Amino acid sequence: MSLSVPILSPCIGICELGEHGLCTGCWRTGDEIAAWSAFSPSQRDYLMQFVLPQREDQHDRV
Image (cartoon, rainbow, N blue to C red; front, side, top):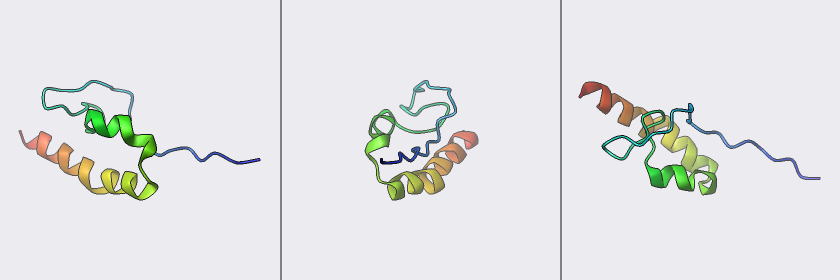
């Protein structure tokens, strides 16, 4: 029997791509959302720890 491990996701259930092509809920691109389950845990972690917070910060400054 294999145990499945849930995939960590930044999704907060507000799934709408804004004018800049980023989800207004999690700040991922459409391509990142589509490929999320294929990313390695380290790829997902890097995006969640570094890339997505930077995108959110940049959006807050506009």
